[in-house]
Structure formats: C-alpha cells, structure tokens
Image (cartoon, rainbow, N blue to C red):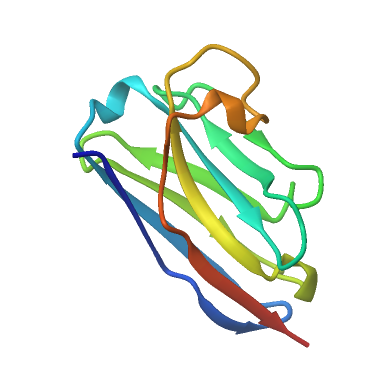
Length: 124
C-alpha cells in the first residue's frame, strides 16, 4: 500500500536548522510531484514547498522562501526539506505529500497521498 513516512522533526532553537525527509513506497514515485505542508495548532494546513517529478521546478511559500530548500532523489524515493533560520512561528506538524493531479502546486487538492506528519517545534 501507499506509504509516506516523514522523519527529521524535533525541537530546535530559533535560528537553527532541521532537515526533514520523507520516504515513499507503494506508488511510482518518479511520476509524482512531491510537496510539504504544515499545520500549526488551531490553524489550517498550509503549503510549504513542492517539487515537480523531475526536479525541474520548485515552489515555496512566501513565509519560508529563502530559508528552505526542497529536493528529491527518485532513485531512493525520497524527498527532503532543508529548513534554516527557523522561527517560533514555524512550529507545526509538517506533512509530506505526493500528487499526480493537474492543478495548482500550492493547493492541497493537487495531492493524492499524505504522510502522518512530523512535529517541528522552534523555541526562542
């Protein structure tokens, strides 16, 4: 069955860095766009970053652009999110997602599969 398993979350001081990883199985990874969303307590899930199937294009949220980099390895079926200069407002559960639908990369409706999420907590 389809699985997206995130790792790399944790507790980090403001200004620090984390690298999230997501390992996929159960579908043809190289044919899917991959993305990251996040959800903070009491807030709606929001877009963070996405990458096309062949890594030709990447997309970033305005709130994190310049501090994050998304990358993928189709051979290893993994997608990563390098996050630098983290702020307390980046605290959230981060979700890995995979999508083959047409549409807006920034919208959750593009994506077919979701991981369980990994907690990122940034303290000041």
